Amino acid sequence: MNRYTEPKYRTILDAKENELGQLQEKSASSAWKPAYHIHPGYGLMNDPNGLAYYNGEYHVFYQWYPFGPTHGMKHWAHVKSKDLLDWDRLPTAIVPVENYESHGAYSGASIEVDGELYLYYTGNIKYSAEERSANQCLAIMDKDGVIRKYEQNPIIEGVPEGYTGHVRDPKVFMKNDTYYMLLGAQRSNLTGAIIVYESSNARDWSFKGELELELNLPDTCYMLECPDYFELNGQDVFVVSPQGLEAGKHAYQNLYNVIYVLGKMDIENLTFKVESHHELDKGFDFYAPQTFEGKNKERLLFGWAGMGEMDYPSDKEGWAHCLTIPRELDVVDGRLIQKPARELEKLRLEPAEGEFSLDQGSTGISTGSDQYELVLSLESIESEIFGLQLCSSEAERLVLEFNRTEQTVTLDRENFADAFGAEHGFERSSDLEIGDSVELQIFVDRSIVEIFINGGKTVFTARVFPHKESTGIKVFADGKMRGTHSHYRLVS
Ligand code: FRU
Image 1 (tube, protein in one colour):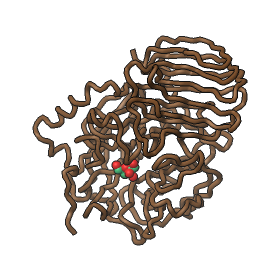
Image 2: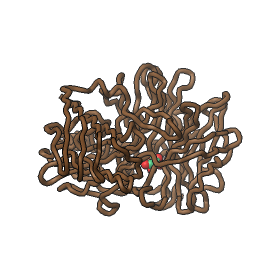
Image 3: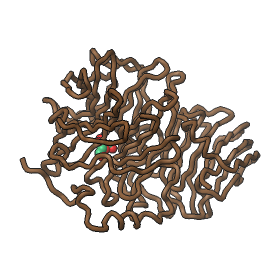
Image 4: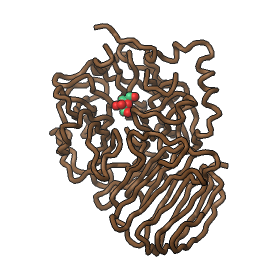
């Protein structure tokens, strides 16, 4: 079959003279570019890939299309850091120039093998706009940071029988001296599945079968992307990005969603016994997260703060999307808890603390920065409806509203001159147990807001594109409410 061609399937090696420099220049002056969130210099970023703390440094790779805010030929871009805070951009790690990756180096994860970092990824192959296949591939980074594609790529050619060409996003882990690879897949009947390969040396792989995941996903679920698996606090945790789930009242409100599953993995027998499952993030822009073990053996997560099939206001500046801050995970009382990685405290500048008290109405609690952390404690709440406004000015505001009668929390991003994503709605909501107090920890970095509620039990990630003057923070309540706040500027 012929390979499919389209202008968006070219690599940086095909760039015209000065083309990349011009792309860089176009997006350099953006007022929406975050500082402490990993983001693309230009072009489109999506999933975090190959995450590792390796050889004393953090490595983050990510899906990257250089030539504009489009899902085109995906490369693996690469940044590294010693402290999770300052990131250095490195040369593009994987440029898809080989036949076995003719339409992009798609997502995957990494694992250290014999002192080298094995980067697994999917070579995407397209025969037409609809027909595709996939090869699983390996690139190896040595201690000097040199990355080479494995000479015997692809390590898995094509897809097993019974599945369509949608097989991708390898996640490799080791159990009892055997390496296992999880892959997101689509069965021939167009439903989503996880398939498993095994290997004794992390290079030669054989098909083992399909993972029996007792999740009872509806038949509308046509694909499972980006599987991840790890053990934490004696629990097995499986994270996956399903496509095709139908929205519920306070569930699956995005086009694509992410769930975590707690239970027991028996990989040798291909079963995962499910105890519970929940959505990982309740905001608008969160997908394809990946986890890895940090410096202190903690489990860290980065997610893509973006969503497919949607236009974003920064598109016109020639760049799109960013990652979340690194989040530290924990399992407490049958729930996965997400907290900002402890390293982020080192960014705190100019602490400003205060108290507030109101009886119907609203009060401003701080302003003047668009890159900050806010720790807010809403105490003695004698109100039914209360909450806060961020990125606010006369004309604009992001509204987080708690409803005690309904025991829900809602985030509304409609009120911005550059509001976007109307086709998928301006509100996201979650059930929440609301008593007399609510604890909030919030990170704002120009065009991204991450809200951790009650110690990270419920998290909302949202992109917003405010005007420069929209930096206000206000609390409001329809009755009495008191509280305290600590504000830290994060960028000088
Ligand atoms: C998820 C995803 C992955 C794929 C990659 C391509 O956002 O669709 O399944 O590998 O993006 O960029």
